[in-house]
Amino acid sequence: MSTTSPQEVDRVRAAVLDADHLVRALATGRRKGQPVPVVDGREVRRVELRVVDLKAGRHLQVTAYDATQAHTSNHAVGEQAAAAVDALLAQPFANWHVDTATETLQLRVTRKGAPLLHVSAREEAVEVSRGHDRAKDRLLREDDPVLVALGISDAQGRVKPSRQAKYRQVEEFVRLLDASLTEAIAQGHVRTPTADDPLRVVDLGCGNAYLTFAAHRFLTAPPEEGGRGLAVRMTGVDVKQQSADHNGSVAAGLGIDADFVVGSIADAELDRAPDVVLALHACDTATDDALARGIGWDAALVLAAPCCHHDIAAQLRATPAPEPYAVLTRHGILRERFADTLTDALRATLLRREGYRVDVVEFVESAHTPRNTLLRAVRTGGRSDDAAGEYAALVAAWGVRPRLGELLRRSPA
Image (cartoon, rainbow, N blue to C red; front, side, top):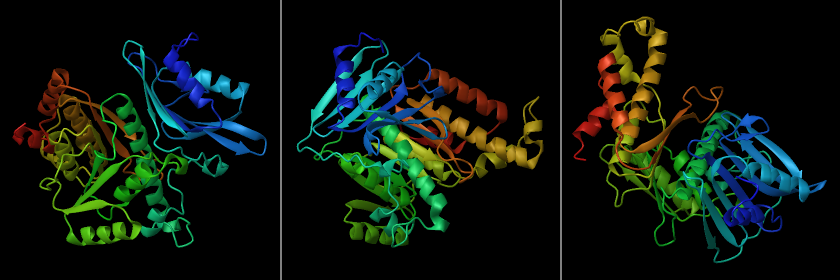
């Protein structure tokens, strides 16, 4: 943004630099036609700012996230902090979300570069926490009651050694949900929830509901505790009655108002269509079922982390590869890896065809799990003819029939 900033940008700048009242600020996304924002020489996806009290005095803490890591720097309140904020405002971020003790500011930069600002006052002022204990950048503390109830942490509030990978998965998934939801609300693709009309989130194939409870906890926790402070109605869907009974018991113990529906992903009935659809490691074509339900519901935001990809892999074994690409499927291990890539590429293309903007990202490092791909889809408008053509050409070339394509073809929509 230019040095002669519009009034809207000046107000956001002032709120971020108000060390007495800032709770948290987020800069996310990039403006259309602009390069990826760069912080300290690194391309970044999002930046989080908060005020911390260190031994050296009060500082503005800036945490920048690239594709795999978080990079934190601290800037003394005053000229140093102002310079850091000005440098961030100069980057082509598409959205700024600022929570203060008394209000929330949401700044969105349009395609033409015009800043649009929405300000909402809090009904009650919140207390600002400036402790440095969040420097490890955890959205859910190890001693959070939700993690203890789920068996990820022990009774002393420490993550169990055997559950470190699960903790990391849940933490990174919630982080992506946070960034995606912030951007989608700022751009007007997801409505701002209210107490009378809460954000409706469904977790398809929830199992023991690690994601359901973690997402609910983070989204509803007040900003002073590091959460979003949103009104949320959460629903988990799983085919097992045992899972529903167990999850209902956990929810009751935590005082969480959540529904758990017994049924398959394809057939589960909800009283109202959700705004957000989540699916973490739904196996093979169950991911296709989840994506099809999200599209059928016109969900504003879909986050799906696929699991195994047996369906397309089996089809590749039975169908000759187009020339000159036979080498991609000649060897078993290469065929399996290519099947993973082809499956998710087809899914992403179908989502684009149906009117979604799609990112395929790594949501947790492969050292923690090989199942680390995530499809992030935001509904933005009408169908894409370009994507339809790309999809048709791809399935014709490889002679495959993706499950998601079949489900959408059968859909009345």
